[in-house]
Image (tube, rainbow, N blue to C red; front, top):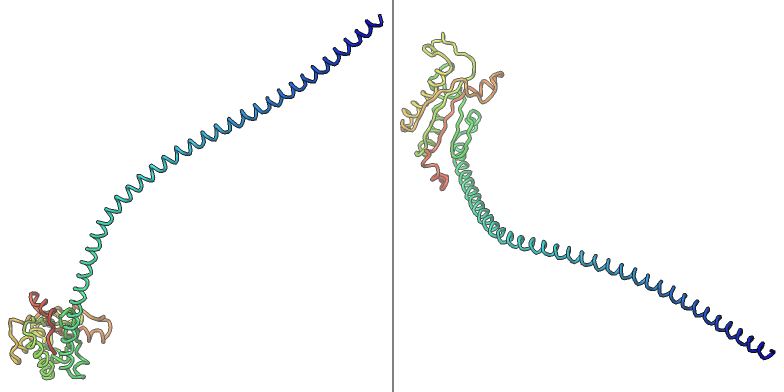
Length: 282
């Protein structure tokens, strides 16, 4: 009996030991399973993240390829435009060079024209005295000479007849006209706006200022022909009456300036360029 009890106790002890060992193994297995599950989950998540990254990189690569293709197309177009622009720039340079040549030509022509104007002005002003210059206005514009003479140095008071005082001045102007034989000459009479006294003896048969201005111009023309031998076909007489004022008729000074005779000496059109090319010597 005692022996049986010992055997039973041993058997129970063995079972308890075996039970404890199995429980420990189970816990270890459970822990390992839990760890494996966690590792699997982490690995799965990392794999998903890697796949997302790969997908993103593939999208970026595709976009880079598109951008490269666009840049290549733009570069090709730029190279093509550069070639066209080089042609356009070459044409533009030629046009600029042509313009520069034309500008230089204009500058040379203007310089020669200015030289001609200066020579004409010097010839005129040098031949007139200081006293005469007070009543004579001389201008030269583009080779055309404008000489403006006050009426009181040419005509008798209230008349279109040339006075004795005018002879010396007109002789000098006649010399200039004779020196420039290729020039035509217009004698132009001008008055102020004061109506003439048609009752005066010297004004009979003169209807208005226009008549008076034309008669005064005609008197100068005939004086130049008869006294100094100026060729008649070079001369033209014209009257502008009160309709070409150079000052206001509201003042006496203005009226005095408007009562004038202009002698306009101008080259013939077909000879003007020759005068530009070579100004007359002093």
